[in-house]
Image (cartoon, rainbow, N blue to C red; front, side, top):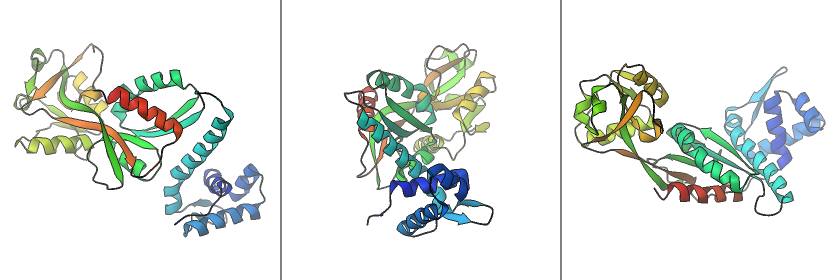
Length: 299
């Protein structure tokens, strides 16, 4: 089944949503209000459902319209980017790469690859949605991004996962903590100390709890937080120790914090590229993904 709509129909919808007014949107698009209304009606007929709620003083997106906004915005940006790219010649043509990435990967590893990529393709722009695992998968499934960098664990048959790297869970502690003197620790050695963990709704916590349950080990936490960065702040303040992915820890010598491997058992999360099955990537995204797989896939 195909949906028959034009780029201007999509621009009309997005403009009305962003400006919250048919009058202002018509002026911005240099259309008459009746012409703008016809564009919206045509799009709603193609979709098969209302996209806007209208009152005498206000206009807003319906639930379906709200869900479509990020997808429409991405489609228009890619279309505009493609037009600009056509004007360029040679290997350094422009483009836009839109990805969803785990915050830890976005902070510690992704910039290195992007820097290398920009040296070769300086005109390609990036939009990076740094999202938790579940939100990142949803962004890929809805088509809001071209691909995602996420942890393995999705059972969605419409998504495919290609492994990039293993990211082990490690201990984070202050340098003056008793466990800092050990080259490595076991899970049982964490028990006497105040443990800081991320909330059980986190993808990292779910993965960790499931892996430990196989060895009949249960973490006894004292502090529970939402973000990994918060747990590091509590550790630095001397309030306890934390278990978190190595990728979420400072990569350089930190003045106050150290990390140590945890064994018996060793647990890691698998990070990889998530794409929609049967989906296609823009030329810019394909080039960046090739470089990403080369940089991380060799780990």
